[in-house]
Amino acid sequence: MRAILIDDEKPALLHLEKLLNKDGNIEVVGKYTFAQAGIDHLKKDKTDIVFLDIGMPEINGLEAAEYIQQIDHGIKIIYITAYSEYALEAFELNALDYILKPIVPVRFQKTLERIRNSIPTTQAVETEPAEDMVKVLCFKRLTLQDGHHDGKKLKWRTMKAQELFAFLLHHKGEWVSKEKIIDALWPEYTEEKATTHLHTSVYQIRKLLKEWGITTKLEYAQEGYRLNQEGIMNDVDRFEAGIQADKDYAEDCYHQNEHLLSLYRGDYLEEHDYPWASIRRQNLLQAYMNLLFTTAQYEINHNREQQAIQRLLSAWQKDPYSEEICRLLMTAYASIGHYALLTSCYRSFVNLLQEDLGIEPQKETIQLYQRLHQ
Image (cartoon, rainbow, N blue to C red; front, side, top):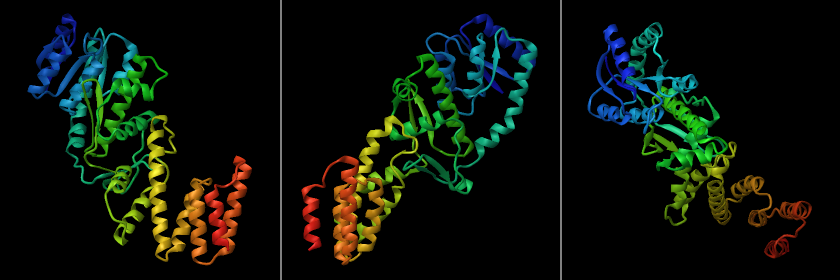
């Protein structure tokens, strides 16, 4: 196995090299006092292991690990730190192991054993093919499924890892700066603590995607992240593409819209109630309502009033104060001669507005009821 060593303290580099040479199973092919120099080496030469100091100038070890993972996610990282408070974080962040300074030979042997034991497991994971697209559902709740695991749902280790995945998916493959992510997900923490949580969540997402053989990549470059959406199907993106397509409303279009409406299982990420998702949630809800009104009106005009009524009653539960839903329902009831239901619909709506909001229906709604009820 080939390894490079990165540490801004030359005596530490020499000591680590001596321990590795004594073991004889790992070849040291480079020693660097700056992280960027080590990263440049990895871009050119295949390397199996990086021994990486956490506390370095310019680019610290935790950030350097992000670049290393972009070069080759199979590289094993062993963190080295003089500060024990970094130990747990290092173990979580793309690291096979961590070693506290000064390096104790007995403890170092355990690291070498961990490296040897990792070889079969790592190779088995990397050669596992990703056969099927993963389905990402964002209406109502965030759900990930793929056919390779018989439709089993992917489970998140932490809620913040789940939110970070949703946040990057929300940005549709665009690069999002680290500062913007921290402001959205960890505004209450100091920059240092928030960065720690960010790195941990990134690691957890990458681990989950790798374990499930999903080709989607969480990428890092120039202080920013993005979720490469290759290999995933997103219900919200499909819905938005469908409603934006230019089309004349005919029977084929009607069936297409029925499918789009079926995608809308609930409001966008409504069960998570992420503040950063609120604007898109409202826009998607309005688009859904517009599509529903258009579809219901088509059904009323083409002798499918019962379908329109069921569709409108379902929508009314979501927006009980909607004048437009009330008017379309009354029109559908009148079209099939159900005047008792028409009256019940109108009076229930009048009472709801009066009791909850203290207002009367719009003039257009009152006039429509009077005209249909005659």
